[in-house]
Amino acid sequence: MVVGDTLLDRDVEGVVNRLCPDSPVPVLDENTSVDRPGGAGLAALFAAGRGFEVALVTGLADDEGGARLSQLLTAAGVQVYGLPLPGATPEKIRLRTRGRVLLRHDRGGPAGPPGEPTDAVLELLADASAILVSDYGRGVARHPALRAALAATAAPIVWDPHPRGPAAVPGVRLATPNEVEARELGGVAPSGSRLTNASRSAQALRERWRAAAVAVTLGGDGALLRHAGATPLMVPAPACADGDTCGAGDRFAATATLALAEGALVSEAVQRAVAEASGYVAGGGAATAVPVMNAPPSVAGTALPPGATPPIGRIVRDGAGATAGRGTVPIAAVDWSDRIGARAAGDVIARVRAAGGTVVATGGCFDLLHAGHVATLEAARQLGDCLVVCVNSDDSVAGLKGPERPLVRHADRARLLAALGCVDAVVVFDEPTPHAALSWLRPDIWVKGGDYGTGGDGPDLPEAGILRRWGGYAVVVPYLDGRSTTRMIAAARVAGRPVGGGR
Image (cartoon, rainbow, N blue to C red; front, side, top):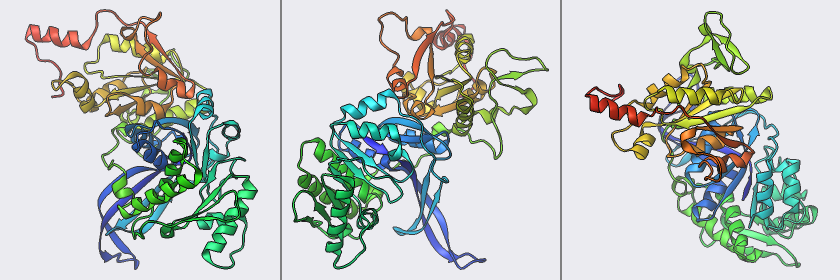
């Protein structure tokens, strides 16, 4: 398990050929932009890349950045247990040219305390084989319920600290600060050689935190380990590499955690971590170690224009009230495109949760919207205070139903759904399942039509296990018999009529 703060990292690569005319600064002409999870999310990616089953407990905001992180992490095989995060997703944007960073632009604002962990999260912490706390000073490692669970677990804990973060819980197996963090957290004034300072800082921090061991990372020189005994262990790096060190500390901590999960001694874990982190930097860092994920996030769909606010609740037509849901908004205030995309969905669910309401979601292809679909959507909307519809993209539908589908492109399908009075927001996803979108939306209720199950002792809906991560649940609503897209297509073909209008 990885517990901590996840950032959205973006590397913007370009070329510099001139200076800005109104200020003596270089102008970067962008060529590529690559997104990846940062912080705890990057550590989780490293662990999953080694073939381990990895669960990540982190804060996720109700915005496009949170949706993008969920998409990237889920695609990498990480099980995301998102805690509600107030405010915006923290982003770290590096402007680069020829492999060098010109400027780093951070955004997301001050950190707010994340929401409460569910029973499923606390049970996982109790049963984990090893835990990495990847603290980036934004509040997850400070959460009282998580700290209590971490203090109670029997699993070995590696604590990767941050100067703005809290002290480690007592008894962690290994803390992994760099030398600046160790000096600040240990409260030791520098005096003497670099190794002397690292050793004194590690010992002071070990005593202050009651940690079994502290490994101070020293960049290209390796790491110094202080544990039981008077003599520290110095682990030199196998080779001095000049490269991008972004993420090297996460690689070190993740490798040490995996080694402890496999039963290694702390000294063995640190030796493996030094070798892995050195190889990571020598091999090109995040640019080569992390899969390229630079395609636009289809889960985000169409962005809202600045200042636009999507409606919550049913639409009032000609002054007539609507009965389902809590909110009403005049028809003149509605632009259907404002209901499509992660920003629209995030704004809806944030306002519903702030009011103590219930978030409902459903999903499907909705290739030819028919009365059965509408019946399911209306029934779903009556179960809560907003309804978010997750729609398979064109590529996703083709993968599930064959190259002749869909008949209607996802942009048109999303627009039709957004125009329904019972639908508050629509998001489009590329994957075969909506798991990435659900990990970010965290609906209280997930709804499918009655053709997906009959109750009794039958199997759970495929999404039920995902819902249990945050305490949600899945239900089936009655399906309007005799209506299906497949039957409509077959009947139209038999009659010789054209089908669809999107291709």
